[in-house]
Every structure is written in structure tokens, then in C-alpha cells.
Image 1: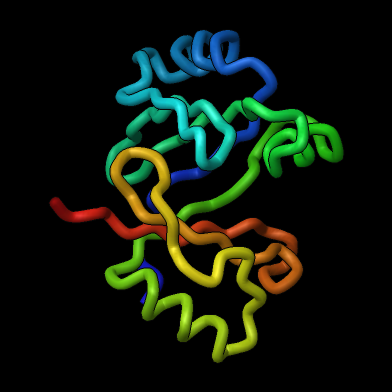
Image 2: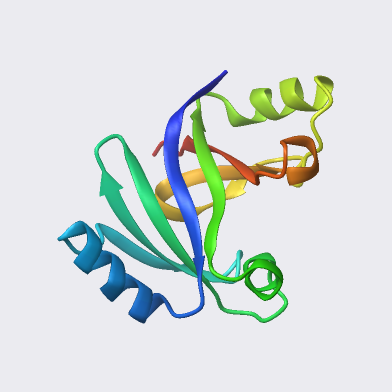
Length: 135
């Protein structure tokens, strides 16, 4: 089943400037930053209790994040939820009629496997499922 919120993803044009902005807002630096070539993004993660805020900058003008910014501007991009078994959850949600962007999970940021649900089936919200990788 879908569990707690893992993070809220915010699409940004400039990760450096946005990191500085959110450092000022939160009064602390990000806990973790990384580049994800498979997703064509660079991220900065601010832990906030049990959840986090993830800044995401596109590294490719044709990536989903770049297209999102071109269409809607910077802002909330997705909400990510923790699941215990991501592959089982994807099968359950597909059977329940949700449209999947990812039929199977793939490596994501911060040691998680991730998969996305299409916003057309979730009231316009891009939903990410994530499961912590072991080992």
C-alpha cells in the first residue's frame, strides 16, 4: 500500500540559485545533491522531518522536467510516496485502472527505486512511488 510522503518535487530552472533560495527559506543546506543521468536531472534534497523537498533541474531541454517548466513554469512537479514493494504496488494500481508512466521501477535519487503514475489518472498530480533499495 502507499505509505507516507517521501518528498515533494519542485522543478527549477537553476539548481544553484534555487538551492540558495531554499537554504535561506529553510535555514539549512541540502542534505544531499546528485546528478541522475538516466533521468537527465540534477537534484538537491532538503530533509524536513520524515519527508523532504527535492529541487530538480533538467539537464536536457527535451526531458519531462524541462517540458514541465516550459508549459507551467517552475513549481511543484510531483509528490512522492514510500511503498514497501514497488513492483507489487505498480501491478495493484494498474489493475485498479491507474495509468502508469513506468511499468517497472528504475533507479532514482537517494538510493530509491522509483516509478511514476500519469497525472491523467490522478487528478492532474504527477505521483511518484519510491522504495528504498537494499544493499
